[in-house]
Image 1: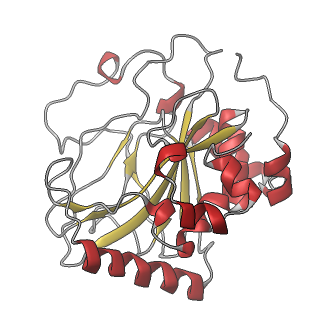
Image 2 (image 1 turned 45 degrees about the vertical axis):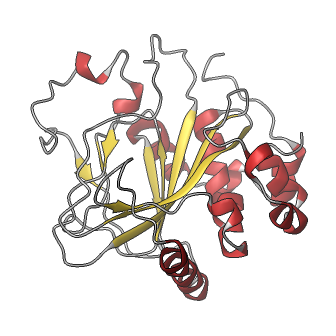
Length: 261
C-alpha cells in the first residue's frame, strides 16, 4: 500500500468525531516532515488531575516498578482495565485524527501503559517501534504513539528525544547512525519539552528514546500506542478486556480495542 493511499475512516471513528479537519495544516506538515506534533495543554486541568490521582492510586495499590522490562521506571500496564479515567485518552478525536493522518488507514489500540522515569533513571537507546525497516518511499507507516503528559516534560526530567524526519529514512538506524553509548546524542536530536496536560503524537518509525531524569521528581506519562488495523496488537484486548470494562465502553471504544468490527 502506498502511503499516499487514504482508506476511508470507519464509521465508528466518524461517530467519535474523528476528522482530519481537526488538524491545522501546520500540524499535518509537522507530522509529515518532522514526524511528530505537540498539542499543548490539550487536557482540561480537572481531567489532568483525575488522571494523576488514578495513576498514583494504581502505583499505591499494585506497587508496579518495572524491574525486568526497564529498571528504574514505573510502568503501570493494562490501563484499559484500570478505570474510566483512562477511557478518554485513547478515544480523543483530535489525537485520533493525527494517528489517522500518519497511518492513512483504520487502526486500533495496540498497547496502553504508563512510563515514569524515576530520578536519575530513564535513559534509553535511540530506537523505532517497528522492527522492519522501510525499504521504499511507498512503504506505509504502521505504528503511532501518543504521550499524555501528567507532568511537565523537560530536558531535566527525562523527556523524550527524537530525530526529526528520521521516520522517512530507508533502512535501519544502524545504516545511518553509529551507536557508541546509550547516552550518545544525535547531532540533530531535539528534546520534546511541553507543559503538563499536553499530548505528543509521534510516528513510531521515528528514532526516539527516553532521556535520563536528572531531577528529583518523577516524570509521568500515559502512552496510548496504535497500530494499523491489519496487524496483531501488542496486547490482545479480546482476551484482556474485563467484563466490567466492556460493560461501560462505547461502540467506538470497543472498535478501537478490536472487540468488534
